[in-house]
Image (cartoon, rainbow over all chains, first blue to last red; front, top):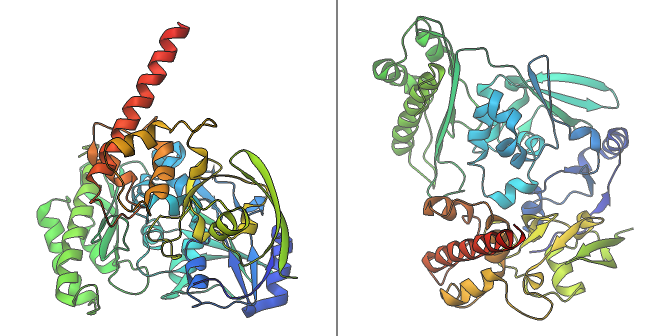
Length: 292
Length: 168
């Protein structure tokens, strides 16, 4: 279980990286954290002719907060989301979700951009970024474009990125005052891929009614998913047990999970429903400042 | 050209070699540097037997290419005992608590546990277990490993307090 032969380049700048991707197109694969790509290479499930190692491209690393928005360079390590006081203060949902990603050793190397570009349907970050209405910045020699999360994720392991494009930045809008968030997951063992999960963002008005809700279930469909019809039914309501129950009762008219080797559809539905309710209620409590 | 020259600081010393670009860091450590303390269990990033520290942080050496370690500092289990061979408190604790049987996973556990000793909340066993969740053991059932890590953390902190007391 060793990688097959490949050519290897390690550009120092994004311009160099883009030139390599432009020249080699679909024969090249970007190597960031390597926590998904290198297992694929080791198992010989991927055989790119060229690896473009972007770990030395400094411009991809700098996370900053500008005009209230979080700008995460694609190379931001997942461990940063766990440790950063900036993230803890303003986007605690990212921190909460990051703690569920695999294991500490994986998070030391794995990157936010890599997780997004890899687009595993059971990964935490794509779903959480959908709940946060994140946008993604892709660059190529042809220019730069900003892609909303809905347009970005096409399917399992498939994104909007063209072969000559590099994901450079993930931008997360500011969360307005009165917002609480929650992420929860069920996996058979600590660190396993999620069997089911849910991310919730709730913004409350002064009278405790919901002004905005974002619900993103994990593992229901092979792409990050929001549930706009259900979110709309929560607007104007106080988010209590009854509201959470009403919201999830509508759930499976909406999306039906499939049987697979990890869980059958009924089990997955039951677990996902419970997790969505839990996340919704917890986010609402946190929005009111009533922590668990 | 599929070989590259790299220089990696390993256990405090610069080590240079020309390696195939597809060589994993785990294989570089074991076969080129003959530091066979680091073990290879799965090459998929699941088992943790290959854990080493990169610039102080535990990582899976089977999920890094050796060329990615160029210019970086790597610490392996061989660095734990002091130069005279006196075992590290963690190694002493593993010995005392019978935290190894076949020993295959042990190096990985030691490398994952070492950075935790100063900071982990040893009063909360669940937190200790979570912090070690990236390492799999098939022999011990983990109880003795958790106990060893807690013992070592206590020992390190007592040592720290003791030397602070001396300075004061």
